[in-house]
Length: 254
Image 1 (cartoon, rainbow, N blue to C red):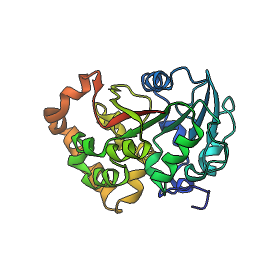
Image 2 (cartoon, rainbow, N blue to C red):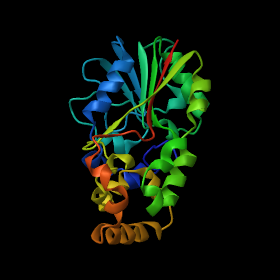
Image 3 (tube, rainbow, N blue to C red):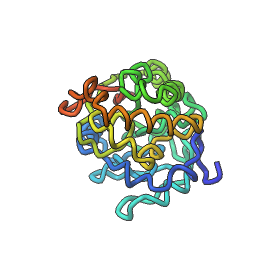
Image 4 (cartoon, helix red, strand yellow):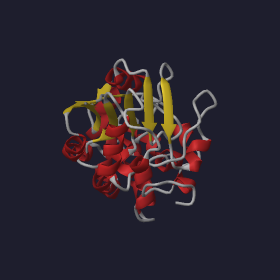
């Protein structure tokens, strides 16, 4: 891509304003921290604007997109311009490797996972979505093209586990009702949030669907919110403190 993005999404076009909508959610950050264990040095691959980057460890961020690197806050380390498939580090250079919402962007998944294994002496921790669980989200009724796109882009969890090898665990990460990180399912109980074009732009799947999808989505969701159809069918989600959706944490030990 024009800004160095190594994946299929053009962040020079959709990455502007990303940090306004994609703030780290403390509960998700806590789950990641627990998975990293006692690791003191961490390489964060596909680091983006720095969400979920631990501040109590020595972190080396890697991010190919210039747009995303430019949005990193000053208190975080500057990101190295590189891609997951070719990490410029020695074998076992870090105690652990981390990747959040990134593996679906890699051009060579197996190559990238092998690189994470190579440079991490300890655990490899990956926050991603299980594509087999995406159609549980109500968005599938309003914009099935978005869900289908996500399901095609996110690699199957078994494929990730097989590529990593060794002892691998997979943990569902509950999404809190007021989740600060505006990925799609974060709006499970706040459907009005996805009527904001900026919120949709911060989710790359929307950039892959046809131009008719967003206007149709907005019109149908606004109608169903106004006449009570959405609440009649999904209203209990507004009171559900946590939602078990597609968000998972994959942890591989050496």
